[in-house]
Amino acid sequence: MSPKKTNAKRKPDRAALQAQRLANLALGRGRPKGVPNKVTREIKSFATEVLNSPVYVASLWYRIKKRTLPAPVEVLFYYYAFGKPKERLEVSVEKSLAQLVAEAASLSAEDAAAQLKALPPPAPPEDVIDVPADEDPLP
Image (cartoon, rainbow, N blue to C red):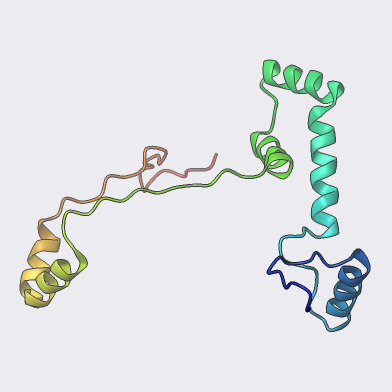
């Protein structure tokens, strides 16, 4: 009688896994996929520890009330501790790419120039200050 064969996969032992990791490192393959490097682990641990400390929370409240908190530093700290949220951009298109290409191909250079000239000029940014040419902008 022959022993029964099973399709169940056996888990490799810890020694075999460690030997494979060392072999990968020796061959220059680096650390396994998904494992953060040492610096990443350390900065995340540090940032989490600081953000959760009562001293930091008290200091944060003080700086928020006094309006002296540098926002970029605070945001970066939260990214380090909790990760940056995914940014999404939704785009809606009325025409397909093929339709747009067909329209562009059917236009002559004169028609395209006329359409561009018909567009309104872009509005200047709100934070730009007009300074007359005869005035020196710096005191």
